[in-house]
Length: 636
Image (tube, rainbow, N blue to C red; front, side, top):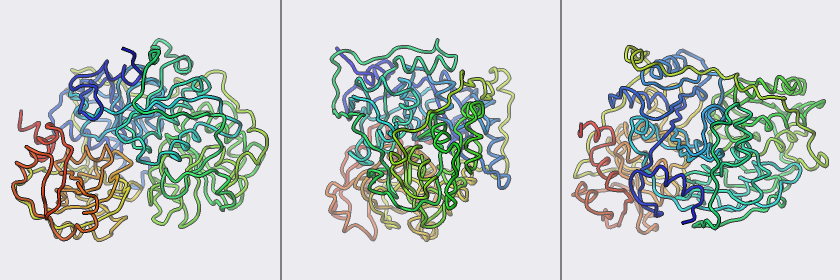
């Protein structure tokens, strides 16, 4: 039987279920990735589970999100994370090593392996021929404890690439073209697999750009074959021995098909405030620009920074523009220094920041109110930048660099026949990163977790009651992101280890009074439109409302990771059988015989409306128990 790459990877790791789209499957996980915005909760979950040592082949904790140390809380979390790494047998990547996704790709990514990460952009590792899936922190904790990772078996969406990218067009424009065609819901319950002759022209880091933003399409993951480009990347890292060729079989089929002729693409840009709001740059030309930020896991490669330096070489950034450069790994920063690119950037007027996520999750670099900020980032959801009334656009490094020169959105093709030549080092600085190895088991057992007073504990999760009368405390529209449910940024994220303090931020971007009303109401419900919970895998967006009393969310549809996170923490996710009922729902919802209805069926009649759930038997047991951890502890 001919199989595509996705099917091969799934079949090699299948533990439970069948490879039929729509059914639940369990996968053996080889590697785990954690970052600090989600990692403190993961470590508290490992502690609650009583884990002695992680069971995956490799687990790495990255400190890349919360790098602004404006008081003691972020550093206290960093100390806690290092102690947990030493206790549980996890690699520790210190602050300054870089953003988790490109850094993991450089040092730990292995073709053919599975990777579960507590970050939605974990799918970027699909660029190496891995099956890499972003999930909630609790699912990563369970995978590290040796449990399978459960996902809905996706359809495989084959995207055939032909041709070669023209001058001034790069990998970011490929994924923006996918978003232009299909929007932020186009990849739901699908794994995107790129194939075809056009792949030969895309480097492993080009593929990283495309795979990373598969998350913005709502896809379960993105997969590329492991071919000569992957071997070339691993060889440059001194890891050629980690390469395994993984190609689709001749005649392999796909559930869904699409095709992109790379030679026909032009520079694209996503308007505020959605990654799916994509237009050609020429249609937005002339819009004034006040900030350009280069970096993030969406454009993390050496070329992405070097091309900006090449465009700016010998020129000055426009006086009204702040050009901010966030190198994405210690290795890339070292290579930019070796080639003189850092000097080119500094002399042009750019500001060089530390390696990390920074502005991508609102940790600094917040733009002025209503002033256009162009970013090579994956997301531009409202307020994610740290500015409530922001105006963030998503673009390629070429488009950003040219806008920094002109002070307005400009089609980069107007600058000339092609971008200047990029300088590359003779050898990459593969040894620049600083990792701390896991301790041997006998030493790890002696390590105590270092918890500052700012680090709290998981809230107690009670079972689902049989009868509930729930006021609808909040009603929201379509495409609500987890950044709007529980914001990132410099104000909120320092409290990520303290659920009670984070509660003051829940839903405040949509309704500043939600925390107060939720506390007054106690158990309550939230009603939403389509694609509720898109974006970050941050499980705080469930834990915090659950702490405030959220028991049920009724929506037209849910984003994959958030839907699973709701079940993980005992919140019942229901969907309208008739979407027109959304307009009428309000007041309060009365549930009787709820436990039996959840356990035995998929439909409930509430207030005369038919509501449905898509929970597997495993997920039903979790919701009934109040969450996954209570279920595990009850079973012993």
